[in-house]
Amino acid sequence: MESLTRSALYEAALGNREGIAESAGTYFLTLCSVSTPVTVPEPKSATLQRFRFFFTKQQENGRDSYWLQFGYFRTAEEATKWRDLLRRVYPAAAIRNLAPRDGSRQAPTLEDTLSEFRDSAWQ
Image (cartoon, rainbow, N blue to C red; front, top):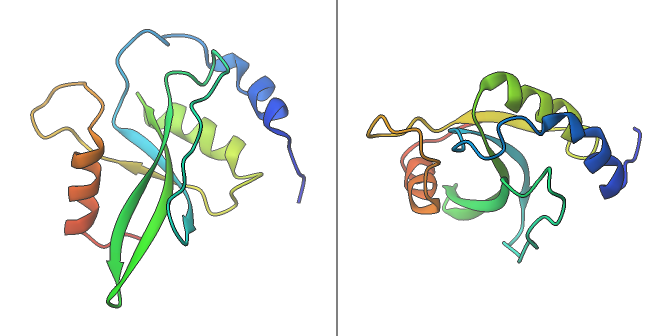
């Protein structure tokens, strides 16, 4: 498997500049499971500043499981592009869609994301 540096990922994503000022979407990526959440620094690259890394928590077999997430994307196509790019580092990366409950185009809050995952099992 090819290993990419963070700067190489930034360079590969440079084509993703259009619409940065628009509102975020409801698509996001599940990158990997983690044993415990850690602090993830805010992206410094202009290309990545509209995205955020965040964690979700889910009960599995009576234990808490944590997942590293990356988003949000306006379209499935944009999410697919990033998934394909990030699979070099996160081979199990998967696209998720958290549809807004009120019909708005605002990105869901972390609380929305957590409550959505607490209520449903996903694989």
